Image (cartoon, rainbow, N blue to C red; front, side, top):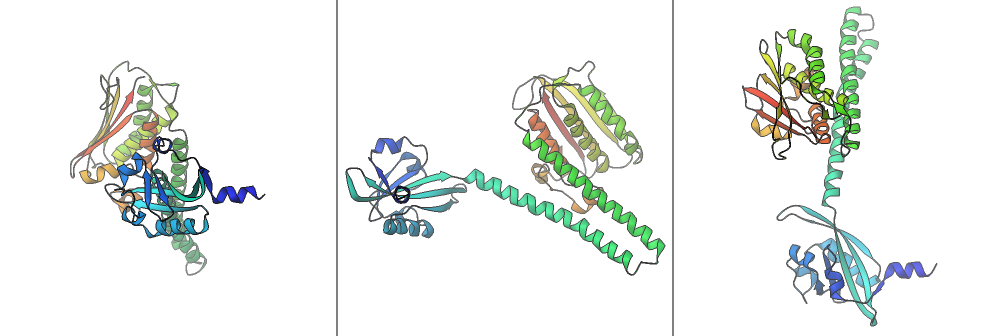
Length: 357
């Protein structure tokens, strides 16, 4: 029982610079006056380390300095978080550990161990943003439903015509929430298995034909036609048929919704010798429409969760803001690529590249 606290308070080390130099993470060693007596290359490459100078001349972070002073006074380990912004944002978790040399137990040192947690911080920020966005997206239709229910129970209690109108709106809002939950489940599922490439064969000719047949009536309702142009005898690829069908359905659905009436949706599928960047042999699937187009500055953000170029129009058309995020993750799982090209008031082209092997 007595050993554990003493071990937690202080480490006894046989100090050898070569040992610390071999550690890839930044390390700084201080004496009992808070002066730097050693830093490995990893630390020197990040900080302008001034040996034999007070730590404050190298890292001017008040929280870290207070932690070091506390460790020197109490000889108990501490932790601190340090964020750097130049040249890029980096966040470190720093363990501040009191140590004594094996050759002189009374000689006090403080070891600073830097652990780069920048990636974890980014993931946490994404998680928080995701929760915030989901809450925001669901709050609006829920508030509408509650408002309409209260109206039906109150002022419109005996107004059959108003009740019919409100019930229709309530059904629309409920269906939008249902679509959002379904898309969230789809997105979560594909994110979990994104690193696992599908192994079964998938017939793209059959899948793209199913998509065109499924959306033919929706296109006709807007006086649009789906024009399909593909190579004959296309080879199968390594892929999940259900997921790839979801990709094609989302892209064609968007092309119809955001295309201009009385125009055509063009779908082209070809075998190509080289996929951009990878150089692999593969198949390209192009979905093109004519409409308002997309500002090129917004294209990089189109596959972000809940990102919409026109939120009001997207919601009016039944969009959840998750469709292209799902498309991106499915394509990534298949080791493919998605390229989007568009300009305002011009054609928009979504090109999916999928490797044959």
